[in-house]
Length: 112
Length: 112
Image 1 (spheres, chains in turn orange, red):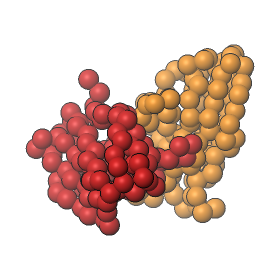
Image 2 (image 1 turned 135 degrees about the vertical axis):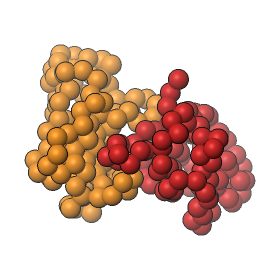
Image 3 (image 1 turned 90 degrees about the horizontal axis):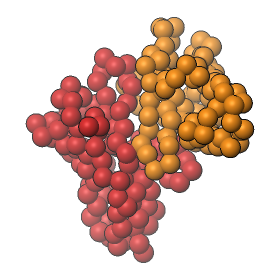
């Protein structure tokens, strides 16, 4: 597609449930990133995929968070046993070169 | 201390004013500097991208980087109501694989 697509756009889940967030990057973009944005805050790095290299998982806040990417296409971010502090907007971005990110519109996650 | 500091505002200016947005950072190894604009409920979009020190101009927008002071700025001339958004600074080391470190964002409101 023309841009980065994320689904769902909104997700309300009960505390303790697992959720899966999806990101479709721009075709041909080798790098894919996940960020988290809490209300009124900047973007917090979660994980980075570059081609077939091992992902940089240094930003994942706990072992409840995991992400996968199939080749250079779709990525899913999974949060297990959700907690209220996981409520945030989860943003995905893809890029071909350093700094040239294109972001999706994000998934707004609310844990009740 | 955060790696990147940005005054969250909010900042309110009249239409036509010159706006100055700023970030300071602590790590002198940052080489690439960016400004993103984020409208409500949208993903950030890249406005300006600068490598190392110096100025870069694009229409009404000018980005400045002063690596000796660890200080970056974004100037908006002849501000318009459509410029009302949150502005995020971001920066990276090349060998971090393009992972961006973001400031908190400054909320700007341009009043007609």
